[in-house]
Length: 288
Image (cartoon, rainbow, N blue to C red; front, top):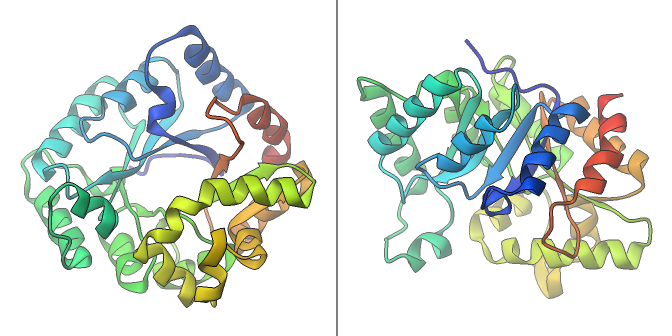
């Protein structure tokens, strides 16, 4: 049975939820009350202990990983962790997996070769286990056509990151009807263009050194000139929705109209604290 994650959710770094304090518990309760159906965790540890803790603090929220790095976690270990979580919180964990990026993997001393082949063989390993991570409980980080096709054939669907509604339309064409399409969308609740783009550049800069993302952005029509100096206005405006609540809702709606089933909204700010006020402001517009 497919895991129900609703039409919209929130994307945060997994490290945002380190610790077990009153603020985190209050924020999780509020997320459910606001109507967010899923919480996505970026760079999630493969032992899924953070997933388990967040599920234990909520009643119905789905917690998804976006993503677990397949170079760092053995398939058998990840499947065992999923089985442990699912026994306690059945149907509420969605495990996103992906091949990460060469600079990230190579920093740990591993050789980053043939990432698509690695992803495909990892899925094979998951399916061969006696207690697998079943297809309906996993999604694949997918940008290019081969990875998108694999996501549609061997998992619940795809979780593209750092993309645009135009990519969502292309991804839906590759996936066809049925598989889940859950793109991430960065947003800045700021109407001043200079301030909004400054925040957006601050938060997108780390990704502009990762070839997988740049190759995908080139497929979408961006060029090396767009990637220089923190990103052109055209690039920043394409990747990050900024403005008032209505402007953000329009971008989310654009993904939906392009074929997204679910949009993972990442609220950006200058600070590192949980952007709870932004979550509150956006919830009514996203529900509408």
